[in-house]
Amino acid sequence: MKKLVLIFAAVLLTAISSNLFAQNTGETPTPGSTWAYSVTDNSNTYTWSVTKGDLSTDAGADAVLSGTTGAAITITWASSVAVGDWYYVHVIENDGSCTNHKVLPVQITESQFYLSIASNQTTTACYDNDVVVTLNGNTPKYNHGTATVSYVVTPTGLGTATGYTFDIADVFTPTAGLSSVPTVTSGNGSVTAGTVTVNDANAVTLQFVITNATLYDNSTDPNGTAADFNQAVTHSNGITSHGVTDNGSGTAADDTDVARPHTTTIGTN
Image (cartoon, rainbow, N blue to C red; front, side):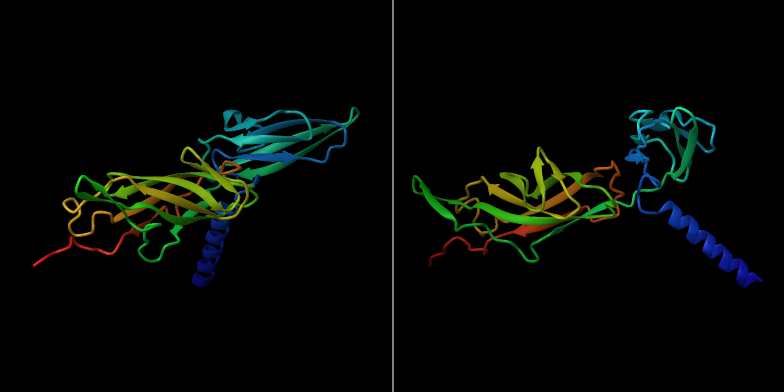
């Protein structure tokens, strides 16, 4: 009997878990997401409404409808709705003589969407070109120029979403003299003011062209290590085209080291 109780409890927990953690859809939306709802258009009139918890309590601001008429609408579920709560989407069809009434049960679920980032560089990267040496008076100056590195950002749990966006930022160690310009080099996307927009459900490759604007000399770089740096790239604020937000379970950051051989100042005897 005890074993039967344990089995029943396990099955119940599994059922609850699959319900709360199901793929996000219009039937299992996340807080803040927007989904389309429709019925076959029979050229009749349609009236839409949403109730909460039962069939008669109006959902109010929890569900914002794009309209209450027509065969198709969208509903934006408020960011304040609670995971696990039940709502009911109603549509009443009227052909001028008779009416019909359909109801779709909807349960708010946790986000299953997340993004992960990974550097394409498995070893220390070098600069793009050789050092450019110039003279300032009689003092040699070393210009290391640019380094190009890339990262792949991969989405998981997009469901029926047709794309996603996220913010990207990088931090350099050391911080002085380094700047970068990111672009999308693989995948259907673009970068504008630090926000990456992807127009399909695939991963994207982000390329960063990093400029080292500091000119070194034999005094500021006697050990040949001053041009070395680390770039750490972080993504944030991921969201799908349905408004499902990143749940944070993916890899949020990765980094790349860039360096040259540590050639010291030339010595004499």
